[in-house]
Length: 153
Image 1: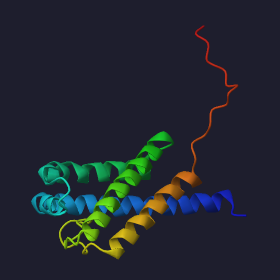
Image 2: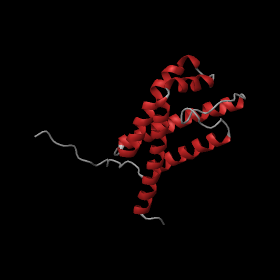
Image 3: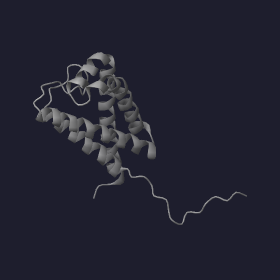
């Protein structure tokens, strides 16, 4: 049976890995927002929202990553849930574009990202698994049903 310390080290390694990947992705997208907006539009999902997505998504990725990395309790879990949701949307968009035969860079790390296909999908699934494991390995403490409420005086 793994020790609590061992599980904590695994969780920390996963959190750091996921957070660094998303901070890097966000920073690289911020370097050229116009090119990233073009990549978003190339997915042909909601092309009219491409500029909005390109201008907001990197900040969301970085903020959620910092919450996952440095946050405690509910804030850490909020970062994890946000990153998991983003990965779900990204993976769905990747699979959709791939199924439609749209040939494009995934845009995951800004300009120069890999082409859509099996590797970006597997990478996203791996990151999703890592995010879930961080939450499972460091669950939020549960409040006791018998906890006393503080008195006013």
